[in-house]
Length: 255
Image (cartoon, rainbow, N blue to C red; front, top):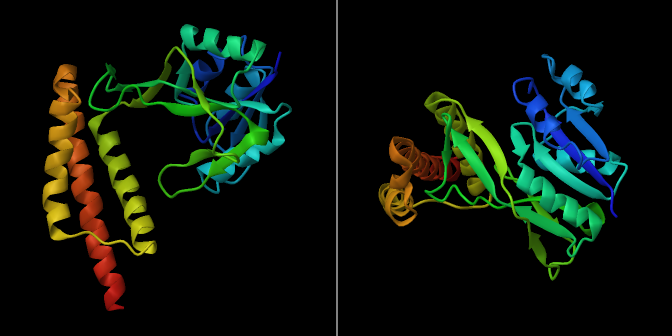
């Protein structure tokens, strides 16, 4: 049987952390919380669930996760966000892996709550996430927007676990809009640094195709009004990202 260290990256997560840590009962042989000097009760809550809390200045998600991984007592890591929860079905899948791992890395389906509704379409589900892995077989790679786990040996196969990882993501449309602003800014900066630009046609038509794809092809309409809002904001995010890429690349050329 392998032993698993659960690692959670936090900053002011008192609202979500208890639910997250309670859900790994029976899975975790160690809980390690890497906190970026929270000013709320995050650290206190973590300690109450038996976690070891390490304070570390935030340097980006990939670096933070790799730092936590390096401190873990076990090679097998379950990496979670504080606003996520392991369901009973997923817990059983992880326990089977503990008995006899068939792979070095596993993905799991993630279901997201949007303004208190679980979203099952529009490309939001199943949102497969790499979260369970043998740390000796790979590492987190940094990107401005989304970090990702990469195996040292790209020929290694990835297992897929049954059961959902629940993601309590957006409580309001305003929160979603703030995230769109932050992520499109980072994505645009990353693209321009890599020498990318965006045509006028991309700016005009990409939002349209995003909406059509997610609302009709990926059945976002089945999630009702919430699905409509998600798809419309996804289209807006595409418009914002490509507009910023075009603007920033033009400004860079003119310097």
